[in-house]
Image (cartoon, rainbow over all chains, first blue to last red; front, side, top):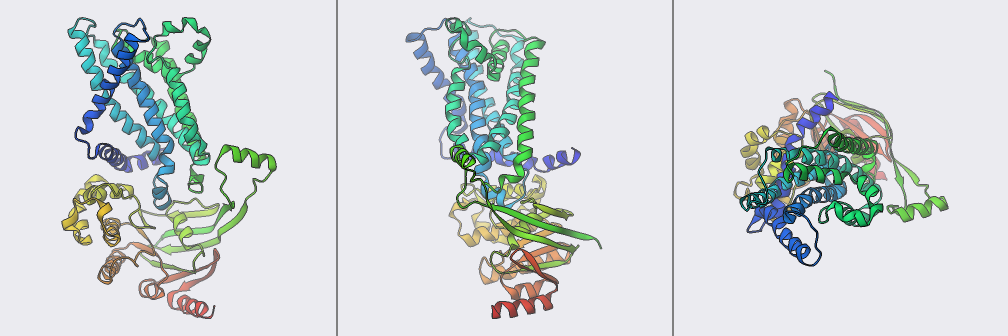
Length: 264
Length: 246
């Protein structure tokens, strides 16, 4: 355990370097660069709000913020895990030539998206500020708890990312299948619809209750939008999901990592 | 003096499937048909040797004799199917130069990236940055993207990163054949400097002259098995004879 911690500290600089490399490559040759992490969600929000306040109507207070908060968490999870999924396979040249602890690769992708999410959080902050100025929302100290659900989601993503990255090494089908799964996952998370909209389709509820993202998104909205602090039960569910996936992913990854090199 | 590298009874097995099964559908079909059997291929079989600290050890053999596989097990990239590898200290593997370069980034960015791939810290790289660039003779090109470099320039940069911080064990696989004549001389000089500084060096090369010039002891591999292990003159002499006759 102590030795593993030492190796992790030794490769911390690599982790930082890979993350900054990804940032540089992502925004290379774009004029606005990192501003896109803030602009993108705002533009998406404009479209979604336009569509859902005219064509399909949901009775949700502050719909644009409702959407944006859901989108922020979901986008982090889908983006980071999709990148983590391919991380081992895409690092084949490196893995074949130098010894590096292999969990660095999925971990790096997850952390990169996590950093990105913090930039996108600025978009949420801007919208909340606007809503407060217009008197639609009130500032509250609970908003400062916003990193808590993000951290829960982060731990979940690290575990889940390691799990699917390992599976993808042996079955490349995972990559094709996953994009479909992400779409289904998006609709099973209350991002654009309120939970009340499910009254007409009660049978979906048990499925949604199995979706860890539902809890993270709800938690996030509770502290950011509704000025409430989730109780111990909600926290326990979130922690339970996160740790369960971290342990499962870590275990599968550890069991299979020595055979990665034979399949990439 | 103790041993820097100890290889005991190492065997490495690969499953050679003629066509790789990597989709669930195919896997299922083969599972049903019971065709999931692979041909076994032993790239290494019962290899044992040890290298003393500060020694320079050469490995010779024809193509496909398992030299690179052996180096990969020593540097921890491959885990041996059987047996054990024990190493002491920081290993700098130069299995192939330039692994870990991102060609979209500049030389400066790649120095830090590649340094961290080899497990060095930021402070170490900052301190040695100038030295690296100077040794690679790339002062004018530090802010040019590596994708615009010639292969010789890439190799020079990679070599100087891998050797600037004195590793305890340096693994060199057939890389001294890159760059022009002058740079090759420079590389050899650098390796000799490291050797006199106590670094253990493992070299794989097809250039038997190079092995004879640099190494103290040599292992001769044939089809994954140890053919001979011993003094450079002795092993190289027989190896040259065998390859000439064969």
